[in-house]
Length: 199
Image 1 (cartoon, one colour):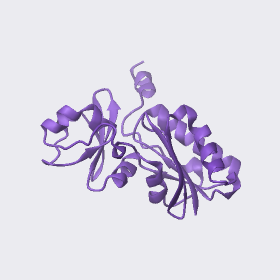
Image 2: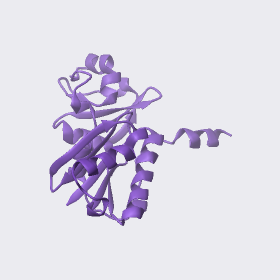
Image 3: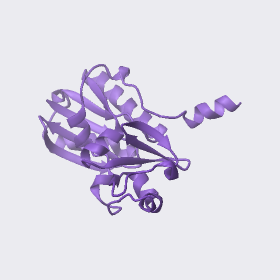
C-alpha cells in the first residue's frame, strides 16, 4: 500500500511517502510548507497523486492550529484524490520511533502531553517517571531539567527521536476511511473555546 503520511501537531512538521513499509522519502519542515513537502515527496519518488492509496495524518495532541492544518490538508487531499485516510496519535508515533521511551510533547501553558498507558495533559512537575525512564519529544527537551531531576533520561536536543516521524504514522495507520470522520485528539479545551466560555 502506498501511503502519504504527515503530522503538523508540533512545531516541526514531518511527512513521508511509504510503500509497503519501505520509506521512499521523508521530509522535516514546518506546517507552512506541508503541501510543498508532499508534492516534493511524490515528485522525487516519480509517483503520481492518483497512485496514493492511503493518507496517514497525525491527530494530536499538540498545537490546536497545527492539528487543524493537518486534518484540513488530509480532508482536502482525500476529497481531491478520492483517497481514504487514517488518524494516528502524535504521541503514539513518537513512541514508535523510540521503543521503551515515554513520549512527552510540549503542550504550552506550562503543561505537557504524556503517553503513559493513555494520553494525559499535566504540569511537568506532576509527571513522575520511574528512575532511568527515557523521555522523548518537544516537552522532554523543553522541561529537561525538571524531568532529569525526577530521574528521567533525555537524549540530546537534536536527537531524531524527539520528532514524531511520519514514517511511523504510516506504520501505525489502521482502519482507513473517510477523512471527514477523523477526530482530533486535543486533550484540553482549545484557547478559542476557553475564551468563549468566559465571555
